[in-house]
Image 1 (cartoon, helix red, strand yellow):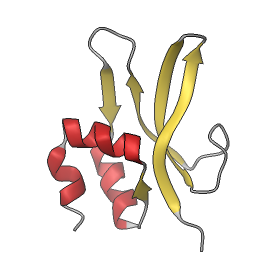
Image 2 (cartoon, helix red, strand yellow; image 1 turned 30 degrees about the horizontal axis):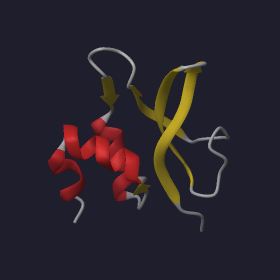
Image 3 (tube, rainbow, N blue to C red; image 1 turned 180 degrees about the horizontal axis):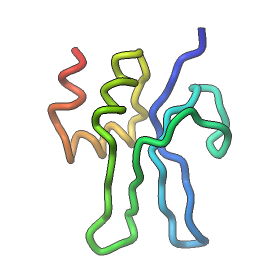
Image 4 (tube, one colour; image 1 turned 90 degrees about the vertical axis):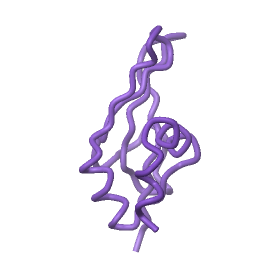
Length: 87
């Protein structure tokens, strides 16, 4: 069985990055197919926009999806209790 990963997928223009937070197979290409878009992150704006659907995130975490280090860092800053509730 293939493992799932919750990671960032770069979108946006040249020198204006935006990132989608997606669920994909671990071995899928970075700009390849993904199963579901959970949210987005925009580091360029002055307020650093960040949105994630916590209900769907917890669903995928309970199904065994792993969180990439960068998404884990973002979630740890915004919602410290989300990743700890899995254990």
